[in-house]
Image (cartoon, rainbow over all chains, first blue to last red; front, side, top):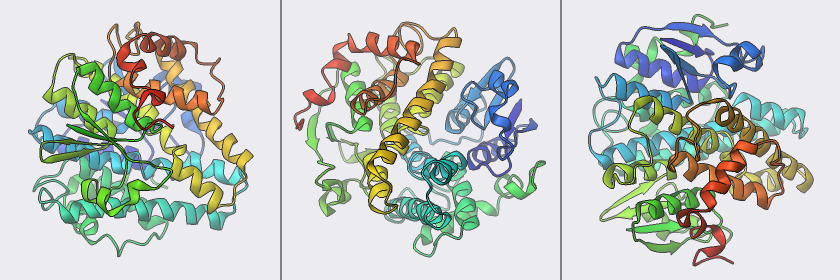
Amino acid sequence: MELYSYFRSSASYRVRIALALKGLAYDYKAIHLLKNEQQSESYAAVAPSRLVPSLRDGDAVIAQSLAIIEYLDETHPEPPLLPRDALGRARVRALSLDVACEIHPLNNLRVLRYLVRDLKVSDEDKDRWYRHWVETGLLAVEQQLASQPQTGIYAHGDAPTMADCTLVPQIFNAQRLQCRLDHVPTVMRVFDACMKLPAFSETQPSKCPDAA
Amino acid sequence: MELYSYFRSSASYRVRIALALKGLAYDYKAIHLLKNEQQSESYAAVAPSRLVPSLRDGDAVIAQSLAIIEYLDETHPEPPLLPRDALGRARVRALSLDVACEIHPLNNLRVLRYLVRDLKVSDEDKDRWYRHWVETGLLAVEQQLASQPQTGIYAHGDAPTMADCTLVPQIFNAQRLQCRLDHVPTVMRVFDACMKLPAFSETQPSKCPDAA
C-alpha cells in the first residue's frame, strides 16, 4: 500500500495511526501542502479531489481519511477499530464525525488561507476563528466522553478505535495553535492514554519522513 | 423512532431520505435552529453536542447524520445504502464525506453567523464564501462521478446509496443560495434521477411539518 500524506495534515495522521494499529506496512508518499503539491496534475491523477490523504491499495485509490479507516477495518479486521455492536459503532462514528465535520474543516489550511487572502480577515481574527471552533468543538466531545458510560481508557472502551485515531491529531493541531484545553479533561486523559501507544506516538507529525 | 430535525438542515434531510428509502416510520421532532432551540437544556439532554439531527431508537440516541445512516443500514439492511464490496463501500463513504466534511461544514448556519457577527465579514463576502466552497466542493465530486465507471443512474451504481442521501440536500442548499451548477452536469443528472424518487422528493425541506 502507498499512503499519500503530509506530516502536518491531521487527516493524514488519522490514517497513519490506523495503519500502525493494524500493523500494516506501506510506502510513505509525501505531498507537500504548503508547496501546493496536492494541486499538481500528477496528484490529481491519483486523487481527483486533490485532497490529502489518499491510500493506494493495488489498483484502487481510496480517498477521505474516515473512509480509508473503515476500509482498512473491513479488509484487515484485527485489531478492530470499530466495536462489534451497532450502537457502539454509531457512537464511535459520531465521535469521529464530531471532529472530522465540526472542527477540522473549519481550520484546515485552505480555509484559513481563504479567510486571510480572499476575505481579508486579520491574522488575529483568523487565530480567534481557529480557537473558537477547536475549543467549542472539543467541548462537545468532552461532554459526551465525560457523561457516557461507554468511555473507557480510550474514547470508546479499553481499546483504541477510529474515534481515538480522529481525536488525537486534532489535539496536536490545538496545541500547535495554543488553544485552551483545560476545559476538556476527559479528552486530554484519553489523549495521554493514546500517546503511550507507539501507534500514536511513532506516527506523529514530527516523526514523519517529510517533517520539516 | 424519533428524528430531531429542522426542515432546512441539510444534515437532517440526509437522514429523512435514508429513513424513507428504508420505509421506516418515525415521529418528527422539530428543532428550530433559527430560534436556537438546539441550544436548549432539554435538547442538550437528548443530544450533548446540541447539533441536529439526532435519532432516538428505543433508549439510545444517535448523533451525526452519516453515523445515523450507517446505523440504519446495519439494523435495517434492506434496501442497502452501502454496497456489499469493501471498495464500493469506501467510494460511497468518500463521496459522502466529500460533501459532509469539505462543503457543508463551511456553510452551515452557525459558521455563517460567526463570520458576520464575530469577524464582521460583509453579507456580500459571506455569500462569496458560501458559493466558493459549494462550487469548488461540488466540482471535486463532479470530477469523480464523471470519470469513474462505478457511477450509474445514481452516484454509485443503479440504486441510491448514502452518497445520494448526502449529495441531494447539498444541491438544495446550493440552489437556495444561487450557486453556479452548470459546471457539475453529472452531479445534476444524479440529482434529477434522485428527485424522481418519493424518498427524496417527499422529504424535501418544503414538505416537512416545520416548513416555514
